[in-house]
Each structure stands twice: as C-alpha cells, then as structure tokens.
Amino acid sequence: MVAFDAPLPPALTGIVGLDDILNGGLTPHRMYLVEGTPGTGKTTLGLGFLLAGAAIGETGLYITLAETEVELRAVAATHGWTLDALSLFEMIPADGLGEDQEQTLLHPSEVELGETIRAVMAKVEEVRPARVVLDSLSELRLLAQSPIRYRRQILALKHFFSTRQCTVLFLDDKSGTGSDLQLHSIAHGVVSLEQTLSGFGAQRRRLHIVKMRGLRYRGGYHDFEIAPGGLRVHPRLVASDHATHDTGDAVSTGSDALDALLGGGLVPGTATLLTGPAGVGKTTATVQCMMAALKRGERAAYFLFDERLPTLLTRSAALGMDLQPYVDSGQLELRAIDPAEMSPGEFAGSIRVAVEQRQAAFVAIDSLNAYLQSMPNEQFLVLQMHEMLSYLGQKGIVSLLILGLHGVMGDIRSDVDLSYLSDTVVQLRYFEAHGEVRQAISVIKTRTARHERTIREFQIGHDGLQVGDPLRQFQGVLTGVPTFSGEAKTLMASRMGTPEAHG
Image: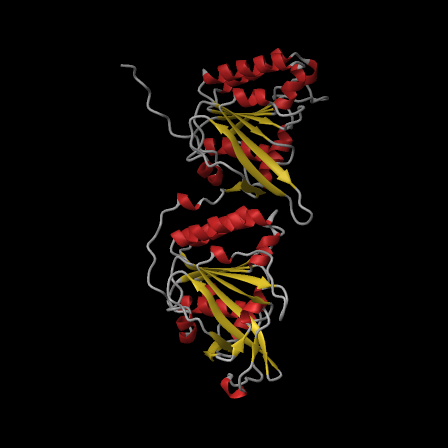
C-alpha cells in the first residue's frame, strides 16, 4: 500500500470573493500565474496574498523587478496596509545609491538571466518564505531573449520552489507578443485580470480562471474592483449553488383590493413585474407593498436606479408611507445605484449581501431600464436577471421589479421583454374618460394562484394606492390604447389636491 500525505488546507488569497470562486483558496506549494495589463490590480493582489499569509504566521517575500520598494509601500499605504511583516527584495536599477545601502540591488539589464535567477534563489534560501510573489515575468522574458531559454529558466524556478514548499505567484503584465501559452502550461493555475472602458462611466474590471489543476472552481467572468483594503471580487451569481427554501403563504400588499386582484397577495419566492409608462404609479405601488412587509416586521432592501433618495423619501411620506424610521432602525436598506459606476456583478453581490447577511425578505429593483443600460447587450441582461430571480426565488424572497414603458398612451413598448422571467406581471396604464386622464391596473399573469381577470381603476392619494371596482366598460387595454365607454358614475370619485403619482 502506498501511503499518501493528508491534503494541506488551501492557501487563502486574502480576497474573500476570489477564495469563493476557487472553492476555498489555492493549493499550497504550487506555482501560479497572475496575468493582466498594467493597471488591472496584479500588484495589489500579490501584496494582499502575502499579507493574508503573514496574518496566519507565514513568511512572505515580494521580489520586484519592476517597481521600487518606495512605490510598493506607497501602494500598500493607499489600502491602509503596512509591509513591515514582509521581506521586500528589490532588483531594479538604482543609480546613485551608496555601497553601504542595505537593500540588495541588481541591474537586470546588465546581468545575465542566470545570474538574476541565482540571486532570486539565494534570497529565497535566506528568507525561507512560505509565500513568494515575483513581479514581473516581463523582465525575465526580456533578459532571456529566446523562448527556449526563458521556458527552461521558468521550469528551473518552478522546480526550485517546489522543493522549498513555497506557494508562488508570478505576475505578468502581458507585454510579450501574443498569448504566452508556455507559461500557462507550466503554471499550476492561471488567473487572468482584465480592464475595459465603456463609452461612459468608470472602467470595468473582471477576472476569470484560465486553469486551476485539481480544483473545482467557478468558471466565467467575475467583476471586481480595486478599493481601499484591496481587491473586491464579486463572484458570478449561480442560482444552482444555493439551497432552495420552501415558499410560505401569500403575504398582503397592504391593499385588500390589490390582494384580491393578485389572487391572494404576493407569494414568497416569486418575482412580480410592474410595467407601465412614466408617472403611472409603479414606484408608489411597490413602496406600498414594501411598507406592508416592514409593518409585519420583515427586513427589506430597495435598490433605486431612477430617482434621488431624498425625493423618494419625501414623496412617500406625503403619501402616508414614511420610510425614514425604518431606514434609521436598519430594517430597510434604501440604496441609490449609479449604473455608470457599479458593475452588474457588484450589483448582484449587493443583493446577496442584503439577503444573506441582512436577512432581507423583500427586495425591490427600481427600475430595470437603468439596469439595462449598465449591460453590454440585451442577451447578457436576460441571462443575469434569470440567475438573479432564480436565486431570490430559491431564497424565498418576495421580489418586485419595475419596468418602465416608452410612451404614455398609444404606442407602448419596452426596451426588453422580461415578463416571461417573472412569476406575476402587473400592468399599470393610463386611460381617458370624460376629459380626464385616469389610471388602471390589471394582472396579466400569475403562476401561483387564480387571479382576477378584471381591469380596475386606481388612484394615489394621501393614504397611498387605492384600488376601485372593476371597469366593465373598459375597452382596448391590450391594444395599447385603452378607452372607457361607460358612465362617469362608475368611476372613482376624483381626488383633487392629492400628490401627483410618479414611477
């Protein structure tokens, strides 16, 4: 029988999201390649990796052929880090420094590659680190001058580190011509960092795992950002990775008439889509449903794309729905989102935090139109929304989504059709009757109950959204030009002086 050593615990990278993607971290005592163009965060990732090891008592060595020690410490200072626990080995030109300088200095451009490699090995023998970062391989590639010699020296380094029980990150700025597949074949794992610019807004950064031997990792692109404290990686949301919760009984919307229209109310684990033109009352209806959840003692999260927070708070209070006390107590997370600054991955991460850490049972997104603008194209939006709604459904969350339609009366259309992703679709429309513009509400579909097929008038006043009786003489709602042919006495009494509806 051949005896096998027990597997070592994974080496944490110091980045929670990346460790999640890697299913716990890196396999210890292996060599990894981190590649990316300048500015993608390789140095920050490397320093964070060494500091994560230092936090558990592992010795860390940072070998730099591209940056000075002063620059490294300046980078660390921007994240609130100190590098005193690490050994920094600087191997870049330093003209003018005296011979009494304690730091070891070499001229990569004036020495043979072999001599540089030997200097690295000597420093490793001296420090005996558990974690090593070498920044960057582009300098070694220039010194090698030939692919064969370069590959042989990298293989020699790999063999050397494997006998020293080191977990090594090689940083590469991809300055070589084409894709360096030789490095990919030598490394135990490859992490690729990318940075892209859109036509407007901040740059977007994302990473993906090219390969990782012996590990089950989460493939695909994952958004990340460089923030104070290091890299923040937002793993791609995969609904199937999360356990399914049993759905409970339907909960009230805060309006008996609206509950009846929905066939009993909102069912946990379902997504309800509210569609309608601008100003018809979609946001007000959503806030009323959320207020009912808050009054039941549930926690809620409201992600606002289209409106300023002060405006929403002021208008809701005028309608008898004061959200500020719930915000102050922490029961309600009310967050304004700038789609030009936040990546879709970060937004999905924010929803996960609200659900898993803050225990939100009610989530609202207002609106999907602005979220659509943050996506590269419509196909990716639908795929991401499918994963997000599946995740919220499996968590037993009541989800409300708002989708604004173009036009007011007549040619009503949307940027994207998400109705098939939703369990319930509520349509809010304007209609004209006796010289007035009025509002109507109807439920187009629901997968959880037998809902009313009627079209009801509704009004928004000081006491929120009020739903009236069915409009039996209402014609043409599905054509996009709804009209009313009945008598005025069958309509709701007009409420003059009530706050104007929005959303």
